[in-house]
Length: 289
Image 1 (cartoon, rainbow, N blue to C red):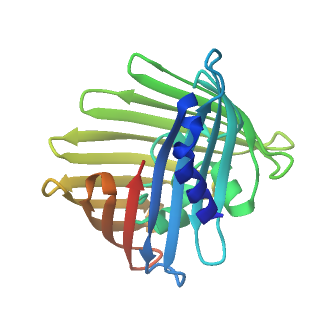
Image 2: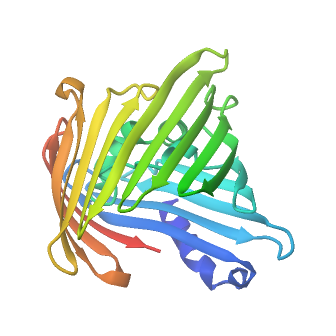
């Protein structure tokens, strides 16, 4: 699944569809980790969009959030019709995932996958862990420096739940403020829980800093404080520190990473992590497109 998806996404831009308004964006990660016996892993988080008509703002979007591990390929696949790039209908990305991803993504991707319940949507977790297939509708826009997105999902046929989520990002001078909330209900209409997160990012010269408070109640995880910082040590080398610290230190994870930027050829990162899951080394190659 992972290899075929990567190959399909890689070949699409070379087709005549590109002339009709085709766009492809995302990240591919590949590497090794000492956190699991299956040390080799791969990950892809990508979206392809195609404008179906030159005169009508109708399009189609295909995407995936996939991990390739030994013997399994946990994933969520997206396929939705779009209207004016603002409205989407189908199996679509939840609004909750639009902001404040895990501090370990692209640094220690396997750790981000194993701790996905802290930063990812309940919809995404259910699709990856238990093969639920949520369908829904989303709308998004921008107003005076504020990006917003809302989505509703129904997975009652295979998953037994419905959800609604919203996310906002405010862009200031040298900083961003972000927040998201997700409400989950089962088929009987009883509230199963709420996920929420709020945070900020700031840039100062060549350094970046991030902080977020995570409340993954619906994902059955304790609240956590996520922190990360990145310091440039030259034109292509950067040092990063990051961590997710839970209540009473029940499920902490933290680490340090050194990365080298190969510009258009991607980034290589060596990370060391520790915490409740134990000590581990991670070597990751990331390519953004």
